[in-house]
Amino acid sequence: MPAPPAVAGMRRAFVNADGVLIATPEYNGSIPRQLKNPAGTSPPPLRSSSSPAP
Image (cartoon, rainbow, N blue to C red; front, top):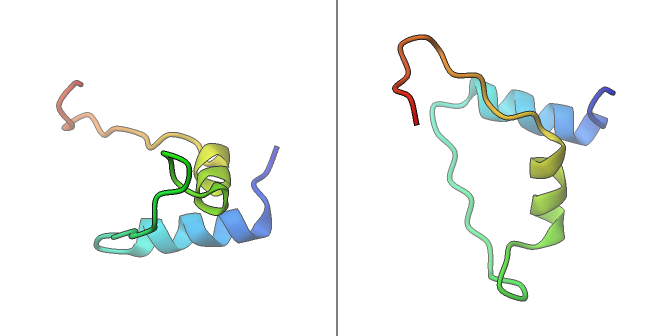
């Protein structure tokens, strides 16, 4: 299932960025749903073979 256009655009911006800093107020002990929903629909990042194992 493809990501919604807004999520796909955000994902492209993150991939093309040198770094990303997200600052948001706490909402009920967590992040606001406006940030949680796109993050939840994005696939986890792929590790390269040179990345250390977790």
